[in-house]
Amino acid sequence: MESRTVVESLSITIQPATINDLEKLYQIERECFTMEAFSKEHIAYLLQNPNAISLVAQINSEIAGFIIGLIHRQDKMITGRVYTIDVASKHRRKGVGIKLLDELERIFVKRGVKICYLEVRVDNVAALELYRKRGYVEVEKLKKYYRRIHGVRLKKKLGS
Image 1 (cartoon, rainbow, N blue to C red):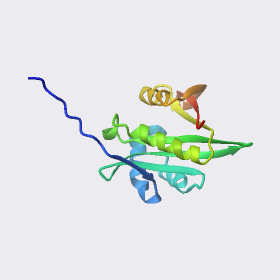
Image 2: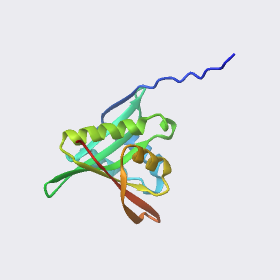
Image 3: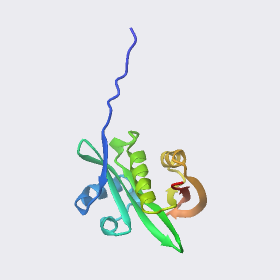
Image 4: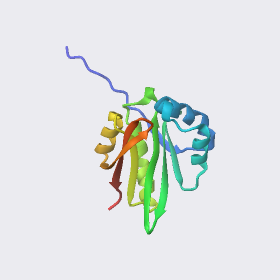
């Protein structure tokens, strides 16, 4: 008799993050980035920044991850930057990061963003793989960007 694996379908919902989510977002940020984690004050600032788009992913009413992106106007070009994307360790490899990134990019496009940038550590293989699968390409190496660890700046053209 053949054994079957049952995969439970997860319902991941994406919604705007608010200042009320600050404690949980800071907890996830510290879990994900330890030494390079943003301070609670910095996350609070971003949550209240009018140029920021802050989203949370929830699974069963629990915040599983979040993303914060910023919109910049330089010359006549509107660009976006993924400032941080964090997924709690118990919710990784479930599609949370992809859903957050896709929704942020959708909002960026709605707001006229043509190009999205992000930075990532060279040793963060899982994140690099995710970004490359989503169409990001390397544009610059960043020497000692994360304290002693090098980073990479990636870019993706959005919209048509």
